[in-house]
Length: 163
Image (cartoon, rainbow, N blue to C red; front, side, top):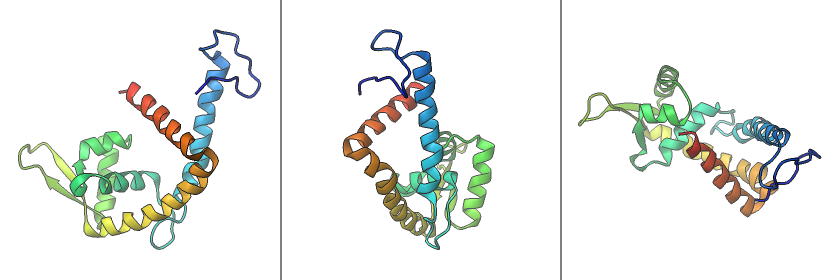
């Protein structure tokens, strides 16, 4: 991707480095896009047509896409940007709904796994199909295939640089 001035803000520094205003604008646009699009991606995606909360979706989809549909709770909390206490409350609610079960690790008593239940797998599979429809509409349609690949590369770079 080549850096270009954003919204008429001139780049007064070297060609490869955006101005401070360009940088602030670029990050603001990322934030605005996420806040605008994310609710559209989760609207009405549950099997009964209700909206799904972002953290619920993130936890369930990560478990669905993981071999054996299980991950350590501490890792899930980190990946969905929740404190361990906040994630424990979310896991309690998911467990109460029957979507998640907790399993102790046989090798290390300190590790507790969150495992997707059969009903959780059915629930997130149905929600995933609706979510993908919305991704096609709100992400793929405006960006195109190459844009989606660039977006993934940029997002991965930012995520990995903050670790």
